[in-house]
Length: 110
Image 1 (cartoon, rainbow, N blue to C red):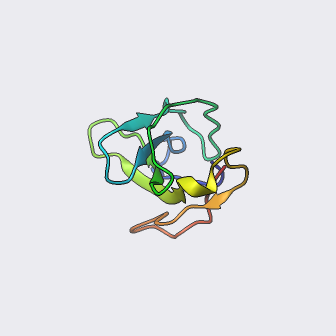
Image 2: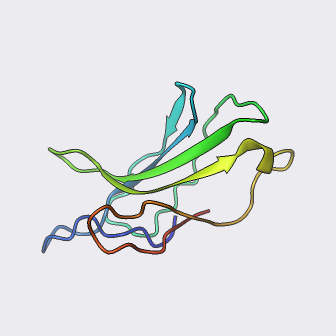
Image 3: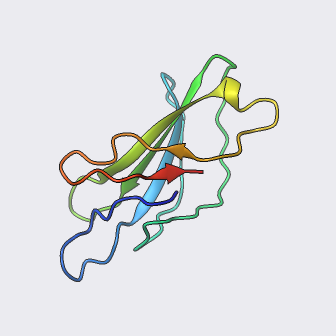
């Protein structure tokens, strides 16, 4: 991801601690990446397995992990499976819902 907002804005709090959840919309299976501490441009380089049909849509949601309270939403994007076969997907997607209360940012998932 690139340009995720700094949800840990308090002095001395560092930057966001992002992780990404991938899921097939309407199905119970999910895959979560590891958390990368203090990072606004996280690189996960992780693989996960989801079973999806050609007509399904994969949702990627990025959160900021917070101890003692609900994790903050940093953004999400939908990617139709049909856009990923047969060779996968290469490129950047602009995240939506990058902020509910703070200034919105231009953040991307690659």
